[in-house]
Image (cartoon, rainbow over all chains, first blue to last red; front, side, top):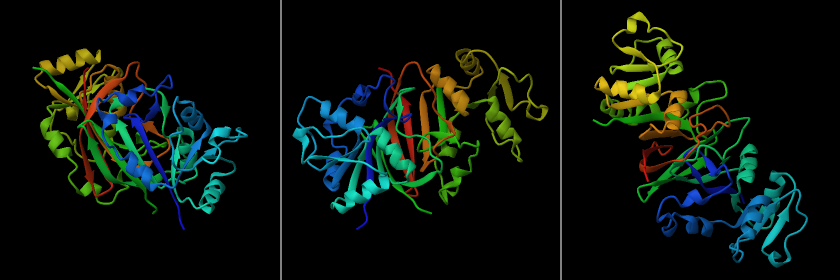
Length: 180
Length: 180
């Protein structure tokens, strides 16, 4: 059974996922955006598991709230040696090449994957392992910060399959990988 | 009479306007795109004049074809000293700060301006002199090249006023500057 690796993320117009200070408060620049349905719940209901990098994992785990994910989470890290005991059964540590990691996750029965975290998304793209990207564009030019996209040795072709406009302010573009 | 400075440009998903080799052949990656109306003629009919940098001017002037613009063109350059004689009456050289250049162009009766060329657009954005941007996203990750957007010292807020999808592949987003 083939799998699908998906990105669901917000960027600035100039493609940053965090500003120069690593902050993401600008994601709330459009009043009311977090009160409306921008498709996150529908997206989450379709995926089987999340795959995230260590930085994203530690960020989410550092929030002052309960663990937010109902679906299994796989954390890709070369440096972590164990998962906090309270997350056993919810989070697994995975190591190796991304191809092998994805293969292992498929073998566990999870095929539709949510790839999250800037560094991990860039690594997946470098390995041409991203199938779909839903990108919500917060209409700001930040002028610097942490870019979503990094260097690639070969270009990757997509199509924009759908576009949605929220609050007459925020566009969300749905890109699907196109193979020649 | 107030003026408006507009951008109408195509980028890759990762925000490049030319690839690593300065090439733009990837703009034609989606078959049929150049045969359909993506709003360029309507945009051009609304503007009073074009303002472009030297590099863009030399590129356009180097094409093996007649001068393509019916509207007046202002070329911003610190190094050019004269306009080719065959373009007299069509193209003017302008120098000075962008604020003064824009003021001068307004005084000549041209208010709705098409700001073109990567470097000049970045300069206009650094001076917060861009009012609207219509950005057509060619659905490719180039992974490197000449970025449309550069560094800014302060963020600039916009709204995405409209989005259009062409050929189920190419999205065009229309951003309008939002002042707090």
